[in-house]
Length: 394
Ligand SMILES: *Cc1c(COP(=O)(O)O)cnc(C)c1O
Image (cartoon, rainbow, N blue to C red; front, side, top):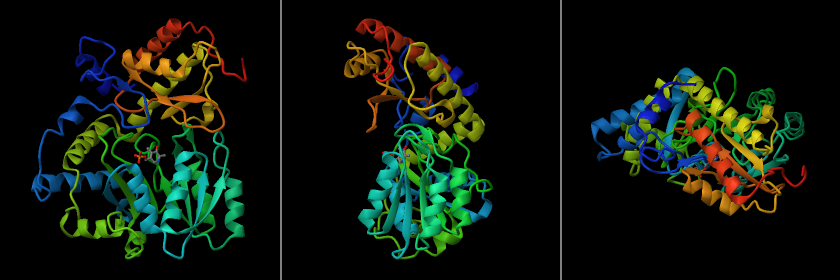
């Protein structure tokens, strides 16, 4: 466990022990997430978009983010206003040329969203559909690439947040590189907690956002892109506001954004990056989330819940649990009672089974995970549920 976040949370508790320092429930969700008091406080300033303090923050932010993939000067970071999807759409729109063809690896809702974006953009695509509870099949990927030389790009989701499954990015990247195609990654929910380094994974671009594992506030996404790739992308993007090339060229010119930047979000993100570095970067943050995830999995198993995924496929980001079949288990009531006790969980998004999800990311530590488990135990007792087995196993 890391020392910084939990000791800080402990001393800043309000008199209701189950609520966060601001009196809000803890968010055990895939984002937006619980942020630290100091990240929230960093938003208490106004900046003009040409203010030199703001410009310094912006430059520093771009350098620090690009540094996370450890690719030296080969990669640049281009931020984009909006939620994470805006960054994914900017990445696809800018980097896939009009005559490109994309292979989308789908095992959940975020992969499906990527396919939908490509349809909006009128880009040719093929989808490799995989079951939601299985990782992307790399053998099949390799076969598809050998059989179709028109495919220029492969798009993969690192942690598919729909289930919390970790896709085999290293193997996907090796297969894609062997076939001489380019890899684009949606690493939204994993970036900053699960390693992604240029020395391990061959990729052209990765998209992520301010409000997931870096623990900032929502409002900004970013892409980390190979500079030589981006240089060749003038005029590709079908959208002006989402043109990553244009955003990059403008930002390189004067360090300013083309259109109104979310200044408070960026100030908070700068503070979130300080706290991320203080915690030990990807290694430290990943260690806290893995500990959170383990407490959650062990505690829920003790209560009789069944997780969708086997432990070896589970990313330490969000866990999907099968809905108990007990006649007195009512998810809406369960959700509401947990929220009253200070913990917000998340409904499921699966087509194959009735599920709900509990996240392990954000400014949460062992104390909050144990607190959530206590609240779950108490709520089950209130509902009169003494068996949490799902339908199939009941
Ligand atoms: C959160 C997330 C996104 C972006 O979602 P927004 O709601 O637009 O922020 C994209 N991909 C994955 C895998 C995510 O977890």
